[in-house]
Length: 118
Image (tube, rainbow, N blue to C red):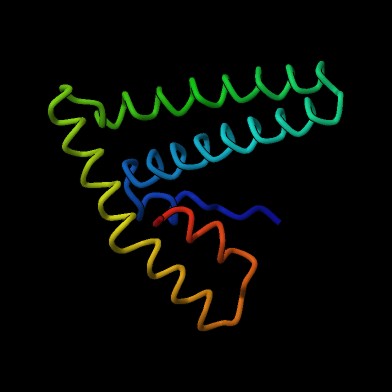
């Protein structure tokens, strides 16, 4: 049975899909770099190199999405955007995550989250 998903796709903007693609490519980049570090630590340097190569490809994809989204501006504007983002993470995101984790009794992330706001 063939399902036509185009009507559903048209209800969301291209901007939304580009933002999702950027997030996915960025996440993959960092995950593959972590995989590379683990492979290196376990003595699999060639596999580590492979993961780093794939991570770089994902980074290129992410930068291409940023270019299309026009998210990179002048240095002053980039600094302002970076400061606002980091301030929001410090003031809002990480404290909320800590409160939620503690409220749920989930201690797996306590030290990692505490490090983020220390």
